Amino acid sequence: MKTDMRIRLCGMQLRNPVIAASGTFGYGIEFDDIVDLNKLGGFITKGLSREPMAGNPSPRIIETSSGMMNAIGLQNVGVAAFIKDKLPRLATYPGTACIVNVFGFRMEDYLAVIDALNGAPGIAAYELNASCPNTRHGGQVFGTDGYLLRELVTEAKAVAQRPLIVKLSPNVTSIGAMARVAQDAGADAVSLVNTFLSLSIDVKTRKPHIANVTGGLSGPAIRPIAVRMVYEAWRSVSIPILGMGGIMRAEDAVEFLLAGATAVQIGTASYADPRATERIAKGLEAWCTHQHVGAVAELTGAMQVAEG
View: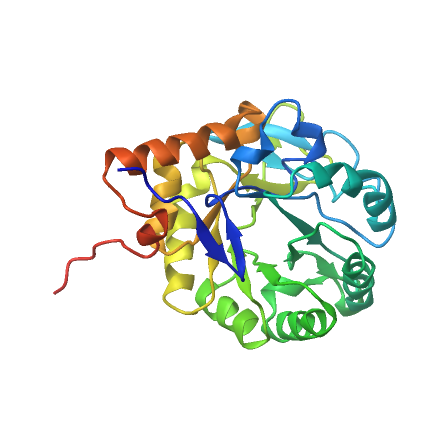
């Protein structure tokens, strides 16, 4: 029996639940000679800002035990250049969802990027990066303050002409509560988790390994925490969840699905293996077939928990 790998996400039908994560897959076109984009459910672009950004100084990526730290600084070409130079080349992959990650440091920055993208063809949805510091509120991160998150999602949803996925910060006391805030403000889905704020020090020089001092920790080291957070969010909201955090193989993806994710995002794995997304998508189908799973969508939230 061949497993039905299709899923429904925010009104979209994806050929499978495997999506390349933002910040690890360029704008999609950079991988089209390495990965067959037609084998993925979708991909999420690098975060786009109102104007181009050069990002943080080097060093800004280091390897850690079972993972990596980065402080790229949201380097990107800007929304206008993306629409003009990148987006047209993606038209050859109409069956693969192109989701655009959006960020800003002020509310009006987010809204301006979404407004510019609304008129561009070939985009399936927006992923709102809520892990940015709000420069109007003294650097308070949108995604760690319930009031700011509600305001951001409400305003973005009013402007967006496509489904709105909110990418949540894990650096909060209750991920379930923040997921509910996003849902109540109009989010069509949530994605989690983003990277964990971290610090690594060179004990010989007594200086941080990352020029930015702190960075975001990702990779297999965070996977059990990320799976737990997906489960907590699934118990708190009724909208779809896109799970991510250290997925390196098909069985890792299955964990996230069982915990409540509708789809999964592959990030750090692409640094170690540029073909990781396609490999995991193929492996997930093989796993489902071997386990006699009729439809991959049946796995969402299907974790068995002993009662009593």
